[in-house]
Image 1 (tube, helix red, strand yellow):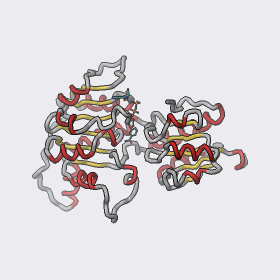
Image 2 (cartoon, protein in one colour):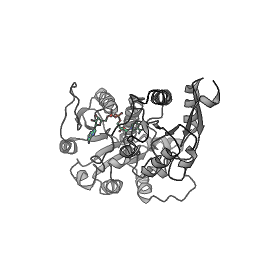
Image 3 (tube, rainbow, N blue to C red):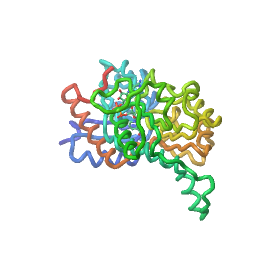
Image 4 (spheres, rainbow, N blue to C red):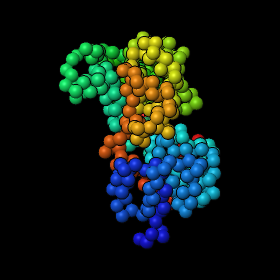
Length: 332
Ligand code: NAI
């Protein structure tokens, strides 16, 4: 097939692992992809001129201004290569440009990462790893606690939340959950959010970021949690008010925090900032705490997930451009 009829995709915020997985999925399919390492924003939207599709990730800016600019340039589709779409002004996009996403690529990747963070935190693996590298075999300060018998509160019982629940049950934990739309066909013990705060030794977040869930963890809800609670966030950073969390850690009310996402992550995560003066005081302070573990939005990053993301994204694009519809379209 000649280059002329190929679907042209401007791929923003491209990392080496994206390029490898998309090139593998591409095979001889009808696409031509230009990989840009820059993020999509008002300044870079001009790069999309002449392309049919923009392919974006979690920290690209797809607000009203950017969408208007893309539409003007003839771009027909915004293809998110992720599940969450809180960075896209879907209301503004309606009837102007299509928006598709990858609703599921590996719930196991994210749920397993949440458990990896929890185990690392409660068994102090992050500390002992560094110690033994320096031939320090002291056990002082490494005491953890059993997960068996503890109560975990799961907020959001969709694809990832449910896998996480299964993992926790395997550890012999008591699971309670809160979801705005509880699953009908399950044996999950649903409680209201106040019960989650009150009863949980560990709370893990697996719900989307919306106006309702924004800062659901703030100074008020932290006060209602058990002293020593462990918080795990692999969902979206702004579910947690980071300053309130820092205060909770400082006051010793929050026992530990495991964060794969951070509310101001867009300018920091996915980049190598070592050797730079770090400007975000809240994140710097959180990272400096012995009981806070931060990973850089890497919960999705498994071989299986990347393969699924690449294939589903390309299928979404084909389907939308050939039929004007897509099963994975994001609607208001
Ligand atoms: P899902 O759509 O299958 O499940 C989300 C659940 O949250 C649903 O059961 C829904 O009813 C519930 N929910 C909606 N509004 C709620 C509210 N106000 N309060 C409580 N629950 C509410 O989504 P999935 O695939 O399980 O993903 C969950 C979240 O994980 C995504 O929204 C995304 O932000 C995040 N994520 C993070 C990744 C990472 O690499 N760290 C990768 C993939 C997803």
